[in-house]
Length: 237
Image (cartoon, rainbow, N blue to C red; front, top):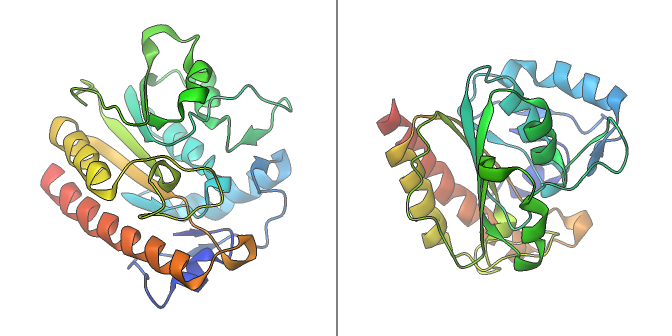
């Protein structure tokens, strides 16, 4: 569990997974954009969690943490992303990693990344996924691929903003996916691929407007995903 905001502290009453907590709240320059100095500090701080099969990576503001996990894979792999945003924006500042551009950074910089499958994108953002040919396959919200078989080991990344507000509360615009649909996707990914790792973001803390109801909804979904992915990994070994 990577702590970059107060979200997990505020969830403790309802959600406290048995995983190591790495507190990075003292590292500045991390919200949405990660400056080079902060990147060096985070890489050092996160080195103990390299072997975790499921990483909780706080709010969607920090989804760029998936970039680090993927760059450590070191062999050909595919990325399956459930996200209402494709996170493929061109960099605003050269050399600065962002929550909105980490997938593009991987495609441009990781020679081992062979394929990206993105599910649940806002229709108006589909254009961002163009330009990489068959390396990138994308589905807008409300549609799903017929098969998640990639022929490669997979890293699975989930941003809960792909869910509708009955199942998640985030500080980003959200999609229409239900929890049942997400669970079906996760099961399909595990059933057809060797999964190397998973991470989940999309928390909401009180300083960003979170209320008791929001935290309870997020905790419920977190617990469902924790149980599902833990069981799936055991079956996937």
